Image 1 (cartoon, rainbow, N blue to C red):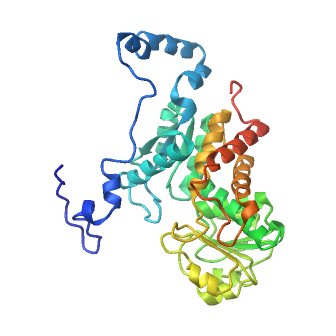
Image 2: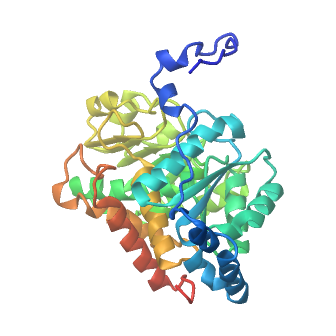
Image 3: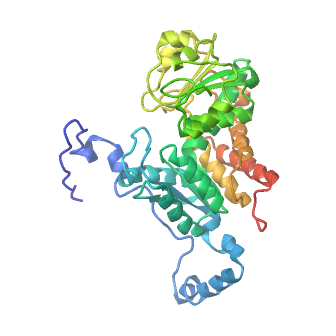
Length: 406
């Protein structure tokens, strides 16, 4: 195969003039990472008549009379739509829908590998909330769930809310809720390992975007006692006049300890740091926290607090978003099992109780073998997806959010 000529990179950009030989990621991505394969084979005219006309017409007629049959006789019960506008891709920011496609393919690959779920990645060439909601709503009938991905805050909150109001299938923004589920699981085990009840923890979260808000909600639901959330200005507190509606609501239900000022001051005496915003926190700031603190520095690729710095400052448990350090807070621990359970149960939405069940299931997989470098399971633990999906499906049934025919 002849390697196509590539344009020269702009000044200051990485040189990928020979990506197929210079970077092992490029050969893996060559021509994409996913494809569509049939579940049945057509080998003769009889098979053709069943898979397509006239046999398919009988199935379509039956579904026209009873739409619930689509869950049995189409791929809906095992297919989800992955939707992005490319505005908040990994740590790369607003790189656009086309550049986001490799990430959406990767997400589809992980759904299939870990959850056995078929996915279609859709990269939308619009940032308009109304257009995104309308577009997704119009194509949703072919799918059993919607996974929103890499959509920037605060638009992601409204898009998720409006889509869930319009659709009778689960709508899940993974950057929010997947992260929150895994953080909750990890903190549950870190607290147990260090002998501190969740209710007595003092937590400081750096970042009031999609992930920070969702983590706050989940930790409150899990019973964490005191949470202070910081944005670039400082602690979210009711006296601030610059808060958005989302941040104001966060301020109303957090900071029972009355912390104020900037992040570094807020960390003084805190038990837990959770970073989802980037930036750098120095060693002396970590040393000002409570003895043997818990440090989750999740910014990628550069953690807010490098693990070596955290350990030097006396941290008891350290987690990052990177795979080259122990305790990676990786959403792949959550989203395949969450959607597998939701689809299997015939869920119409994903509730807080379902997310909390997922977090507890993830935590439980290592609760009997906890160690400072082992507070979450390995993504390749063969028990993971099945354990999470069973817990989520049961929670969906208990919450009464399943289709009558499921």
